[in-house]
Image (cartoon, rainbow, N blue to C red; front, side, top):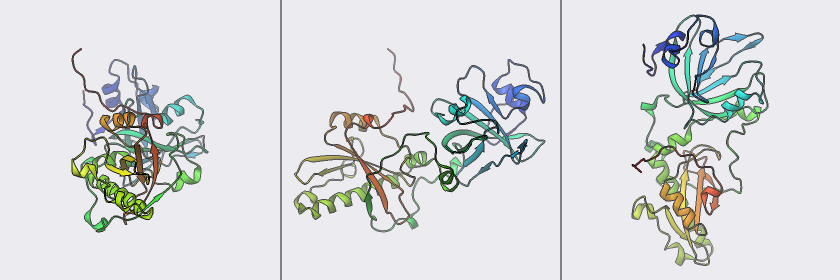
Length: 322
């Protein structure tokens, strides 16, 4: 039996034998022999996608494509509507707990190339029959992901931040047809986690913003006391910056930065979440987004316990014997 390896080629029967060897395979028939979407037996919400570029069904021609960022454009079967059970499952796909394996080929006939696991990014919430999705290929060029912002894109000084009253929308609500066609979606959350310079830059922007705000309020004395805690003592305090309100009360600020849009997910450590709970009156999350190459960005502020505003998804567990 073949084993599953990224970028290797597999026939439908090969894939069947890997994921469901106890069942029978019939070439050109049954789910494994002919369908494009296959539910893996005894694994809730785990699926196989078999995709052939340029396929058609009835009057509909499928238009799948992969961007240079590994964003995969995909359509459901033409008969599917937004309220269909399996479509709802895909819209609510959770890549932490559920797996969708993508096998793609350029044309018929031929084997499929295994391109890895998918993560839901967005869907068009206005069009159906078929429903249009964008997925992130989680294994796309993983060895080439930049861990740092290239020096050429980083000016000597931080840019400017613009405060917005806008807040992120609920995940998986989708976007309009126009936004879906023109928007660029990518797995910015995963990239942000690996990009230390991006995080450092966001903190510098917020540090500059806080000091300027206090100076403009005739509190230069407080501006001089603003501390970049994560630089002074390293990560682990539960916040990045200690600042002040104009009345002198302390603000503990945790900064999360992304080049993505306002709805980009982000990661927090258990320590940061715990700190926001214990010191919720003084804790402030500054979410910097849409960061440009000129180091300008927009941000919103959440005060208090972050678990009251955001859904938490555990990505791993530490286990010890009971």
